[in-house]
Image (cartoon, rainbow, N blue to C red; front, side, top):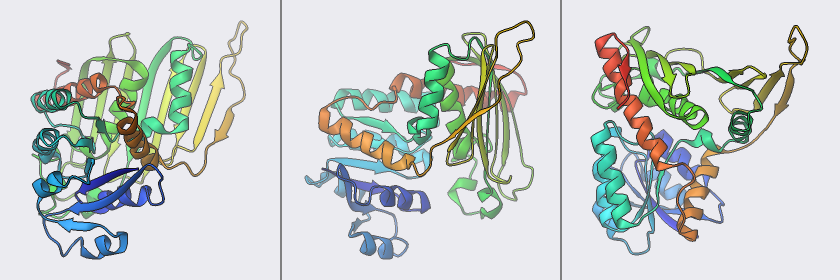
Amino acid sequence: MISAGIAGLGWWGQNLVNSVAGSQTLRFTAANTRTRQTAEAFCREKNLRWTDDFDGLLRDPAIQAVVLATPHSQHADQVLRAAAAGKHVFVEKPFALTLAEADRMLEAADKAGIVLAIGFNRRFHPSMQRLRNDVRSGGLGTVVTISAEQTALHGLDLTPEAWRAQPEEAPGGAMTAIGVHLMDGMIDLMGPVVSVFAHVTRRAATFADDTTDVVLTFANGARGHIFCSTVATPNYRMAVYGTEGFVEILGHPMEIYRRISSLPGQSRTPSPPEVSETKGFNMLTAELEAFANSIATGTRFPTPLSEIRHGVAVFEAILRSAASGQAEKVA
């Protein structure tokens, strides 16, 4: 059993704690927040020791790992401090806001010999694993394009003081909140991105840009399209079009897997859709238990850090493109 502390107990931090209630591999024993008032009731309910001292959390010899559900701009500093203390680290997405920050974090983790994990939980869903196998095995033929959409409504409720409404914390419209999930899924399925063309707008939110479109060109020659918004009716879709088949994953829980195959013959008519469902899978539990298992076995976290670093480079290119109004190469 891995004993962990969590920094940040907003709604997402609380989701992470709740996801491993009853887990046999990881348990949270302590929490770090800036103010006690906002966390006291939850800490009492979950039997968490509260502290406002992050370094004190790191000095606790009973804690083997820390989970960071903190504002994006704090990730780099906190990872460096945790690595120096010899604590394994799980970082919520986005991993970093700049490639320079990402490189410092990766170097510190490597030097300390700790497990470094990033919270792209959708990689762990059986639907995504099945799609990954379909793409990599050639089951869809030559992939022509990939399209991904994710929407939510929390942008309508942001206040001027909310950290997620600050452009330095959440640049790129909906990218840091949800778009990076789509970007990471595309890198997982399609490989490196060589260029992007992005557009960011404020459609309905009062205090922050809320909608982002990105066209991506992959090193393998395929194209991709990301649409994400924090002010649109919640939905999720990941779709891959190939010469031999089409697959889409539907809905925020990613339960529905829909496939259409290209039937042989002169007209290449499509087959009737094959639809399957995976109900009740908890992606947060899966990623945190994978983190704990990596610590226990001394192995790397399943998500390759090289792909995480590339994702930060793609994110930087998206911001440059949104500012320039032109396509930008990925570093």
